[in-house]
Length: 87
Image (cartoon, rainbow, N blue to C red; front, side):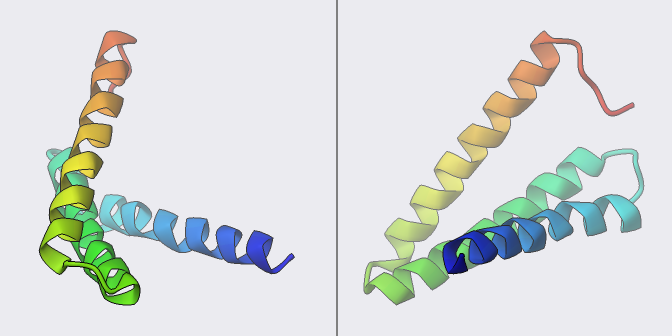
């Protein structure tokens, strides 16, 4: 139960960032704002995880930033292939 509640809380908090960005930033170019904020928080979480695990901050930040960008790019590519847009 503790793991389920922790996971639910993490997803809820993680979902608030894009929600807040879409509410307070203009719709034109919102994808760039979302990417910037997502990357910013990935960097923070990468550093935090590196600190918790006793790992190198630089390696953790580069790894999470790179793979996070790849994941967002692939998601955008799939959306483009299926004709999904936010206009």
